[in-house]
Length: 184
Image: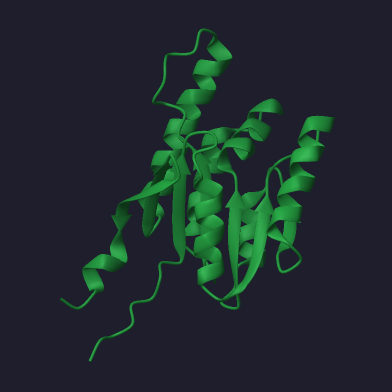
């Protein structure tokens, strides 16, 4: 007799731009059979971003509920996560950019986010960009962003039960704490 292994409450999906990470996260969420909720961090600051947001919303379809929150993810996760639905946070990279744009303490907000992730009342999948695999940025702001993103990704990966890296649409599971509980 096989025992069902519950999926982790917190999953983390990261990869490069247009790598397929969001599509992978959405597929994982749909497979859970819970009511899907998108926590969108993009702020519609220009026409291009407004068009992108509309296109993403249309791709997900009417089954998905959307919560728009560009900065206070810890609060949203605490309020919105429950056992009847699955949240997909897309994405931590834009969230970080939003924080830096208004000079909010990134380290403090990262700590708040990770604390919220350790007390989830329901499943969450977080999406983020891996920005540290390329060349060193030429300006100080871009280097600060890259460094903050690297630390943020490390902290979230540490608290997540499952971490998947997506490249060219192919997922590579880097961490899966549920694997240790599977029958052999």
